[in-house]
Amino acid sequence: MTGTDDPPDATEPAEEMTATEQALARARANAKARGYRPGSVARRGGAGAGRTARGGLSSSPDSPGDPQPVGEEVARLVAARGWDAEVQVGSVIGRWPAMVGDQVAAHVEPVSFEGTTLTVRADSTAWATQMQLLSSSVLARIEAEVGAEVVTDLVVHGPGGPSWRKGPLRAPGPGPRDTYG
Image 1 (cartoon, rainbow, N blue to C red):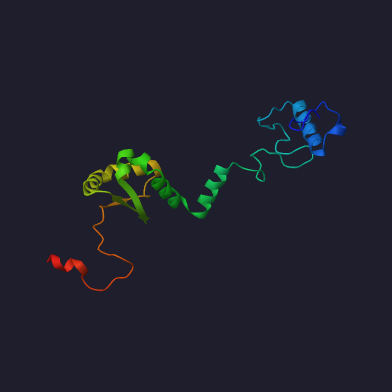
Image 2: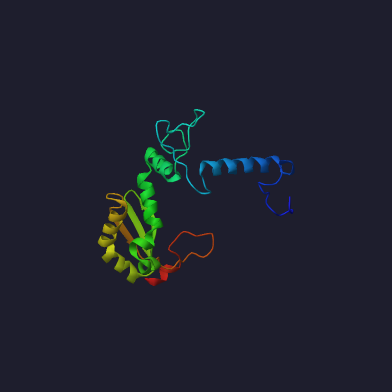
């Protein structure tokens, strides 16, 4: 070997290479002989497609026992469990800025989703009013993005009033607001 940090060279004598290095050198030589390059994907064709020379399954995604792309497996799992609506709702909440625009998303945020009703909260009464006016176009955009009947109603809440609660305990009764009237 040439140094401690240098990778082993396939031209070095086999005695100086460890078993792991020898196996890697053999695998690289076999791949090179077959015409494979690093990062290339091997596809098999012909009558024996899907099977190796020893009769085992190949790495072709066409065979049912072979590894499949993660996205396809997740989609199959979601469909089998009946989670389509929940995933679509999560998509609406996750992509809220892209669906309504950055300016609206900066002032209006989705709060909850129950049944087919999406509840959003605006940070001011002006934005709550604006969102009420935009609700039909937002519902149309959501329907175009995720499909019909996922979100049918949009409930808009304005900002909450001031909190009169101070501390963890509370006494029953009207409290400090009884002086207003």
